[in-house]
Length: 252
Image (cartoon, rainbow, N blue to C red; front, side, top):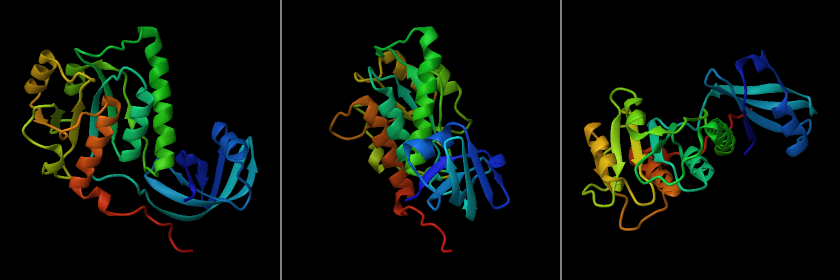
């Protein structure tokens, strides 16, 4: 599959594409691409374009647009993941969630969260998480880059959800299986995943007040940084999103 990049609509004029800065340097030096190679770019108007590279230099990439279509790679079902901060490797969590198809990631601080970064380090961490999300979205063939929010209290993250969002809370003792849940692709979901020890009593009360439905993910316990991605995959499978293969490029 061709390499995929996100660009601004202004980078494309007619049948021409110009990219400068860090992305041009990455294409020329890290990926070692050359004139005649093909890439796909996604603009901020929800379109994707096949591009034949004509000139490749570290400071400037020029190409010719060979086809254009609405973006592919985006699930119809919109899933916001409310993720308790894992003890380590939040980058892995973000990477997997974006690749699977999460629409938005809201890290939260719950009762049993161990890692609490100093306030002055949070912006740098969020910047890094968002960079990981961008890289993962490009590699996975996404049509947009999911936003990764700054960590907040669980109650604040739930209050920020869009009206009408169905809230699901993963617990060890729920009666309903996530894998058997009926899912409506047109109704947004929030999947709430606790830390390694699960949600505390106060967290569960907060979720109850938010109208959350409790669900379980089977008889085995997953690390929290992987559990949310597995949960997203189950929900997307139930919605029918995983029935189609990767979209092929249009015929010339």
